[in-house]
Image (cartoon, rainbow, N blue to C red; front, top):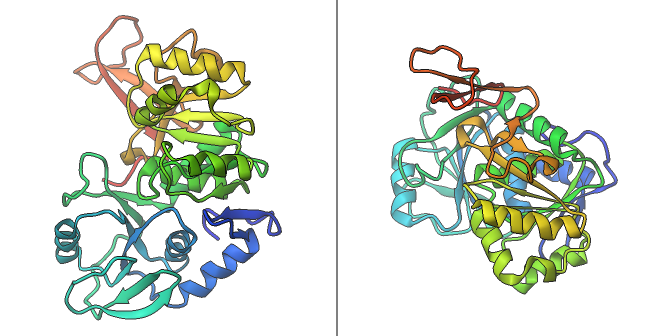
Length: 337
């Protein structure tokens, strides 16, 4: 199955917040079963969160060549109504009541309803596989168009430089409809790793209890998350199982980078600073743990199979230091359009 490892069928793939777990084989069976409700080549809105049901619907979409738009469960009703009226999806997968005219419940799945309507299908580009909002376009009519090639190449690149394998276990500390949070899910499942599915904030004790209970090995966050950790006291957090931590989603102040890195280094935790954009599926570059002290504040180097360079206003390559130009990125993870 697309983005799900073909190996490790007997290993745990997902652990829900309530402790319920499914193996890779069980997860793939759930995806196969749910995909039977879907027609091929249509548009589906998934209004979900970090839970098994949302991931089953997400991966089922790929099985039937459906194009999902991932949206937060906290989306405002007027924003959702606007998107429905513009894009006219054939399916809506949601916990919340949807007031859109013409939709009826096709099936109930766990706590979600799959709604459908008879609709003239948009002519979807053959390569289109996923639609995501960006932090700048959430609630607007602009969406990033991603292909299966984009998703697979970025998941594999991330897995390579973070050395994700079957022994890695991440916790979902970010929304699944956010490209960074989704990349954590994709890169672990394509590599045979496992995920603890949580919607708790880092300010909640339950979040840290899940890390200890399920021996989570990696943790991801945006600057706000790491600022919270500093306030909580990084050295006092119960994270003995954690082996690596990653940061993206904005610039973290250099003094905070140094403070966090110092505390993590004492606990033998690798800290990766990363740069990315939804238009590049998720990640563009990363700063290795061994380079943080020498280059704090740098976005690092291009991810595997990606390329970064700087051009002047005439499109000529800049290869001299202290020169101003535009940063250009190229790779198989760059979105359509």
